[in-house]
Image (cartoon, rainbow, N blue to C red; front, side, top):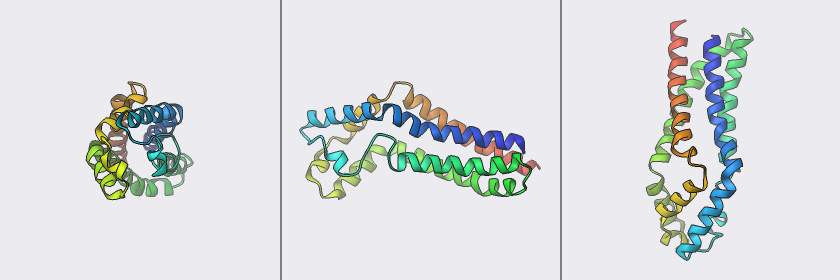
Length: 172
């Protein structure tokens, strides 16, 4: 069970990379987006007015931290010899895989998803915004190693680590 716990801690660290990177570089990405909005003739405050942020606030912190905690709890229990660690692992690991599938899908469909959300918003400026250019500006606001390298590494760690943990659990 120690190998499963180690994998869970590694996966938790992968999730914690999200708010850490956003905390460090989110303001720079936000400035890049605001410059792009200005270039498009869109008020630069439109993102903030609609609750959209590139920093580590809101769900960009509580969701990955919550997932990390959900992974660390069974790991700590297992390392302490508590059998609840294994039971919780059987619940948490499949959920982590499903959540990461949603994150991956969201990443892959960002332009049409954001465009559709803006179309439904009723905000004329959001509706006329060039979403692809805005998202490209956000991406360029982060260091080159974040997307796609860190993002793909995180997905690889989450998927392979979770599958390996489930295989190890099943082998017990």
